[in-house]
Image 1 (cartoon, helix red, strand yellow):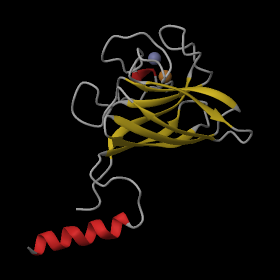
Image 2 (image 1 turned 135 degrees about the horizontal axis):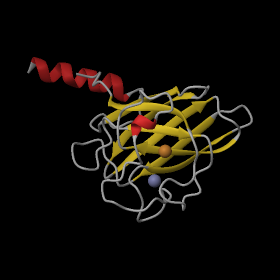
Image 3 (image 1 turned 90 degrees about the vertical axis):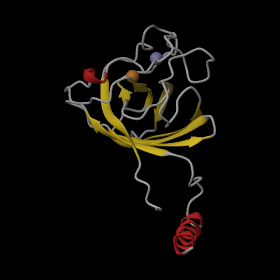
Image 4 (image 1 turned 60 degrees about the horizontal axis):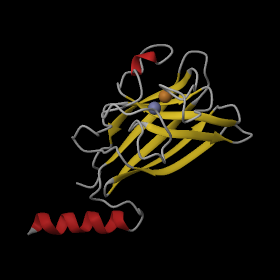
Length: 176
Ligand SMILES: [Cu+2]
Ligand SMILES: [Zn+2]
């Protein structure tokens, strides 16, 4: 009984200051610049039913559109982030945009930087999850590119070099 009371107290406190469902898994990626880049940022993920809400804030960009993807390997160690591999593509689909019914699961489209080089991104994405199945993005990487993703060129939208890379990790459960 005592345990139950403690849990309720924690949930009540957190619910007051957060609109994220406490039962939904969340994950984070901290984007760090590749060699010669100034681009950094944070990406937050929250499971919302069968979709994942992706929210990002990225700085140090040139104004305009930049390709934004989940790549298959959670390895940002190479100076150019080539270690993160290709786009996350568990179902061997062609490259496309986030609105397409057939696409790489990791195709998040583009972020758009303003005149100050700051991009804010928010989208509900299907085909990925924060669970344990083949669609899971935990342990993979997020990449921001030099150029616009044209959403059609194969295999990666002709988005050019990799400006920042971040490993996707499950957020710590702070409420228990
Ligand atoms: Cu990419
Ligand atoms: Zn792709």
